[in-house]
Image (cartoon, rainbow, N blue to C red; front, side, top):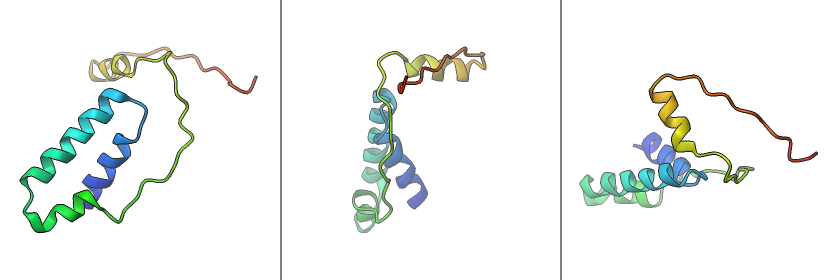
Length: 84
């Protein structure tokens, strides 16, 4: 249970809005089917996700990347050094 909850919390905090919303919905569904005495494990898990240096980007549509992965397609990406 802890691994599922911490993983979903990690996804919720990422910049990918679509995936974040999906993870939040899964957390809600998991909580809905659990006995009441297990709700604190989902709502207030002692396992925390630390801060990250996530770079916000409106240049990449991550849903297209996920679609390419599902179809097992190659993806060409270029990187840009923001410090230059």
